[in-house]
Amino acid sequence: MRRVETEREDDVATILISYRRSDTAGLASTTRELLARHFGDHNVALDQPSPDTDSADRLSDTEVLVVLVGDQWLAEDETGSVALHTDGDPIADLLHQALRGPARILLLMAPDVERPTQDELPEALLEVAMKPAFQLTEEKAASLEPLIEEIEETFKSRSIEWRSTDTGFSDQDWDALIANIKRGKLVPFLGGGLSPDATRIKADLAADWADKFGYHRPADLIELAASEEPDAQERLARRWAREFARVVQFVKVKNSQDQLMANYALSERLEKLKISDAADKTAPYRILADLPLAVYLTTNQDAYLEAALQEQPNPRIPMSDRYRPSEAIMPEQSSRLHDPSFELKATEPVVYHLYGTSGDHHAESMILSEDDYLSFAVGVTSDQTTLPQAILHAIGKGALLFLGFDWDDLGFRALLHAILPRFRHGVSNQLLNVAVQVSPDADPGMIDYVKGYFNQQWNLSLYPGKPEEFTDELRRRWGETAAIS
Image (cartoon, rainbow, N blue to C red; front, side, top):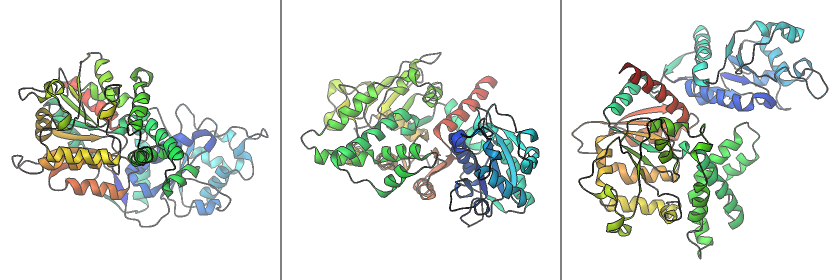
């Protein structure tokens, strides 16, 4: 389904999601992200009742009120009364106002929760029980499709003008991606979004070191730390992870007598991660490992991908290697990848760590600070021998997939500027296929940056969604292809 955005310029959400914070805060945040992925971030909001706003203000210009009903939606409060039946309940107040106004009310039932009956509702809200209801399942994105279609019909009936954009990932894009996998041409670049545990570790270390060494926190970090929004802590962790390189650079200046302190601290924490202990969080790796790919390029320094390849029903033993500056490549360390006759094979895939790997013997190889990323970019662009020719050949002849990156992350920009410019010209006059996964809440400016960077040089497709959503859809489509063939 193509992403669409309204032509409206106002600041008020067209779609408002009502929910109980004590019940479905996390699910409400996920629902908002999925609806925003389709309707546009500025048109979907979570209801945030406060003493300063009444229900009429909260509903101002709202076309659709999505009421998320969890198993505690009708629960009793501390006095033994059902909250929905008590005066001042923010959800009851909002529903009272919505029933008197133009907003269309749609119920969204949490997994395994049944729609409320009239017997359970206060007399003034009996009509709510008759409103259309939609059921969420564990397959959240897929189960939201009927609700999305209903909202679209509502907008159409109210003559709200919508336009398609070119930022969606179409069926043709998926077909091209699957075809390139079957041809053995897909080359994935994997970022930190695929390793949430490692991202959390970096975030925790950055916050701890900021306190210890007196790092000045940017204003947005301070605001996020004080926020009470449902997804604030998740966004705070991602933001600290993006700040990691700057914090490490600061620590190296403050702690000049131990320049590798950050390397060994991070390596020790990463070495404790086990893929078997986090099957749900490493599902994207498992899905990617099941594909017949000959090479995986990763900026992550953990060993999740290697473990996933070996733990498949049909295990593949990967060759794991890492980037080394040319002056650090000794003949006995160069590995088979630097042999000009080496050929990449899907039966023996290569996992190449662009920013080094963890481990007692490899911690010093990890690229962590701002200076490290600069040295990487300069080293790769100025010396053709630092990256193995087999890797460069795969990039130059392949279809590229960028998955799990924060687009304002320093590591991502270093990667783009270090590796890809050499492939901009002279590739048989053929546009190279590039698929890029972008976060559904990514800043529009960053999406424009990605589109502008690849503009006219690459055949670009953007997928607005989370890495796990992308890989889950990839798993489904690849499974259908495998069943047919």
